[in-house]
Image 1 (spheres, helix red, strand yellow):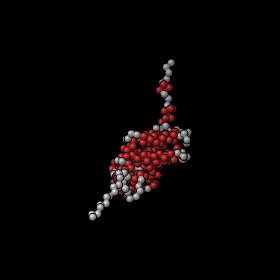
Image 2: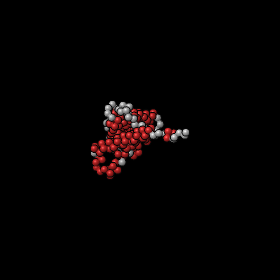
Image 3: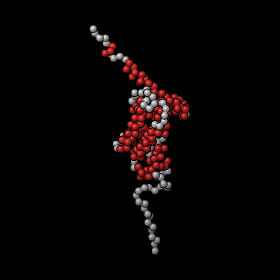
Image 4: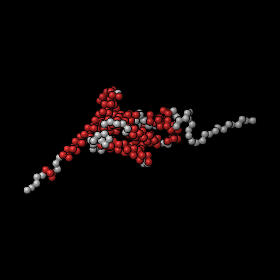
Length: 238
């Protein structure tokens, strides 16, 4: 009597089997680690899967396509940046001290996320939906805090009438450039660019740049107020 063939039990469609239990957070962590060296437009499921030690099908199961994964990463990183700015608000000190703290946050942030600008623009701000709106609202809150800081409401009586929107994006661009254009800095400054002391120097430079611009703006405003109007300079006819 012929032996009966044992039927293979087929696993139903759904979550792919893995050697270990790997959840969304582990995949996000692997994606973020990969983004430290790979631009968002060049990252692949295979790279993330290798770092996480999983089948790349598991990434598709949780996130769908690569833009969906990168959007979640962009949201997560944006929330972390906002939380760091919120935590910095409890620090006392002069306008310069607190401005420098915000700049140091940007430097640390871009040091850990050198491709954040491209990530957030391409995979979050270029989309439509509540996630984009929430991210923009976080930016507006951070800019509002910077405007309050520059107005001197909580530190000194001197006001710095600068548009905080320009200042915020300018600081971000300067801090990001230090990492995205590191070969340029290395060519100009040598190996010292890798030292903590160099980062402190750069932080001081950006702080002084903003404070100096604010002082010039104040001086120009005061000068325009002191300058007599054209009507006042014209002698009256008798």
